[in-house]
Length: 198
Image 1 (cartoon, rainbow, N blue to C red):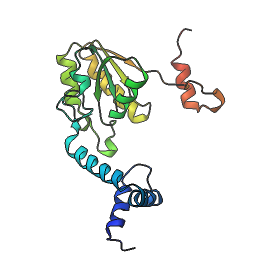
Image 2: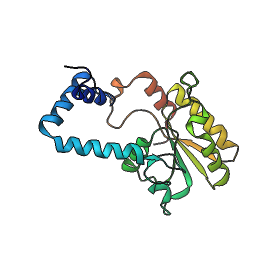
Image 3: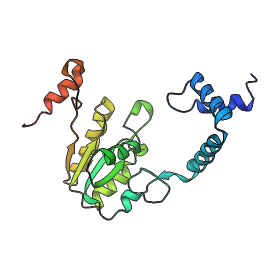
Image 4: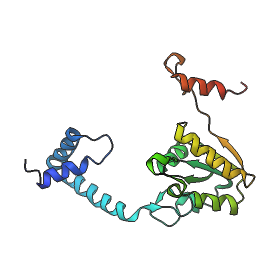
């Protein structure tokens, strides 16, 4: 197959998706071309439009087509609660799984100096302005318990403390339905240290 052919370009373009290697990309390309050209055309059209129109919300930094996302524009949300997450997908997960009705702030990652990710890349100036200017009573950290996540959480907690804002962190530990013998030591230790009255 000619490496510069349109078919090969399609296969290579599909490889940018997470978890899609050369064989999966080839399978998807042939499926779209042989069985669902209409679906492929729709996918291309919507993807092209989304790449241009979708941006970060000016208030919370999640993904939206508008200057301010629907969650930030909703007057029925609790302005005193601010949940800080790493990625926009986590906002969706929290909204679907919980009854949380506060506000959000999306970092877009974790502090990682080795990867060149500092406070400027994570929108800390926007977060600082919100902590300073809004009546936020509690910041809820929903950040992964990795080394970078711990550093990021500490950085945010220090910033929030300047404004007298209470900082909490979501619980980490044994998943619902998990069996202790299959839980790794770090998760089990975290679960024990975060135990509460039953």
